[in-house]
Image (cartoon, rainbow, N blue to C red; front, side, top):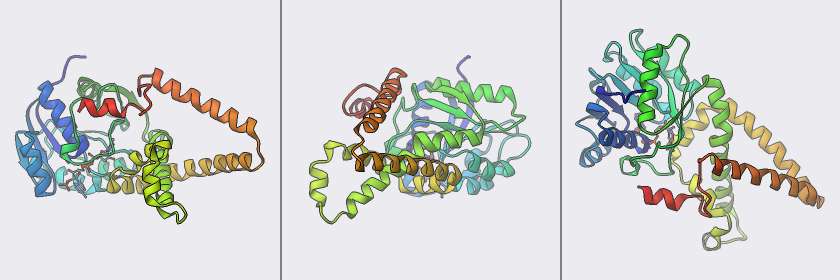
Length: 309
Ligand code: NAP
């Protein structure tokens, strides 16, 4: 696939994800012009200081005018509002995509507002950190990470291929599935781990018998790895929970059952059951490292990631 080039790209939302896309587009010269929109003057000013685009406007409607590619990177709960704002100004033939962590809800919010003559192709890059805002982005965030598309029936193949080529230029590995399946998969690989992390850190914060300074002092024993996830953006994760409710509740039910099994094994001193589970899970970690989705370092590769920025 040849490297795609767009005359004008509009980035609606310029936080961690939007600004990482902007940095890659700039570095790889994937667009003639990049127009950036964010709702707050502060974020917009910061994007300009970082020279993430060529033009800056608080109006999403203004930003998408004449754009060939529009990428919406806002919390999933804001998708409908943005769709309504941009719908009337989209260029015929434009590709409109998003990066939201839930897909069925984003489609339900955006698709009804999209004009017939644009190509609306929902997407989700499975890459990120716990940081937010335009300063948090960096070039190469999407390299060797999956980007999943959940195209609607009847999607124009040429438009889909062009969008895939764009993400491949950013270094992404490409996959395609339906939105419901995406939401189930993400519920287990991303949403549940974040909810568990928020919960465990919340529990530690509520303990009366262990002091906060002890939790922090001894955190390298395991707690620390949960705190990274639990430091993720509250708005984004509130929206993910509210917009992937069914799949998350289904996975939480399974999780609770399995936790009860573990609880029982501990209570009854069933070491063989514990050992069998811990051996199985250790193998999964090895597979993740072998698949190139993390490095085999004691800090889960976070140090290496920080150095990349
Ligand atoms: P972020 O750093 O917090 O940036 C959010 C952007 O959206 C900012 O430009 C913000 O504008 C704008 N925004 C916030 N609330 C809005 C609203 N109600 N209406 C319109 N614009 C609004 O977020 P992010 O991490 O880039 O996440 C963006 C999207 O990517 C989310 O849908 C998330 O699910 C998805 N995603 C995130 C990750 C991750 O690890 N973070 C990974 C993959 C996908 P102001 O700053 O001007 O208010």
